[in-house]
Length: 165
Figure 1 (cartoon, rainbow, N blue to C red):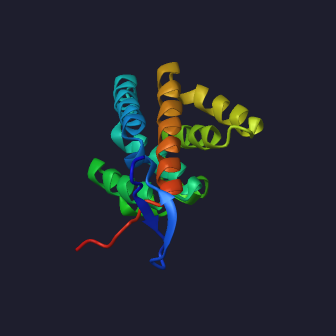
Figure 2: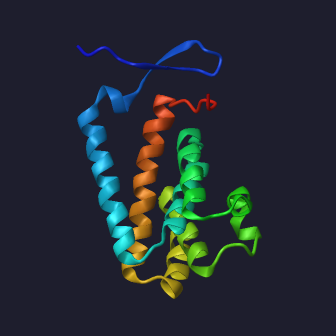
Figure 3: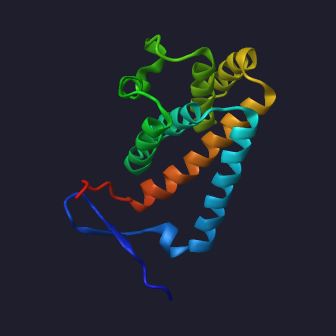
C-alpha cells in the first residue's frame, strides 16, 4: 500500500485528507493532459488567454478553491488582465468592465458549474449563441469542465496556499 501524503488544516492539525493528485499520479496526469488538450482547443477556437483565465477564476470562485484562485489570478495578470477587473469578477454582472464575449463566457461557465440549474443553462446558452461561435461555446464549456475537475482535486485534497518566502 502506498503511503499517503495528507494535508493539514489552517490550524496545523492533520486531518487525514489525501493529496489525490499525489496518491493517484496516473489519473492526475490524465487530467493534466486533458487540460493541455483543452488549452489547444480554446486557442484554436480563438479564445484569448484573458478570457480563459476569467473562466478559470470565476469557476474557482464558485467552488471556493483557494489554490486555483491563487494560480489563475497570477496567470490572468500575466496574460494582461487588470487587478481592477479581477477584483470585481465575483460581481461581473454589476459592472461595465467585461465585454459581451466575456459576459457570455462567464455565464456559460457558471451554468456549466451548476449543471442542475437548467434555466440558467438555457439563458446562458442563448446569450452565448449571440456572440460566440459553436467552437467558442464548446471551448468555454471544456475550460469550465476542466477547471471544475481541478477545483475538486484541490478542494478535496486541501491543497495549501502558502505565503511567498
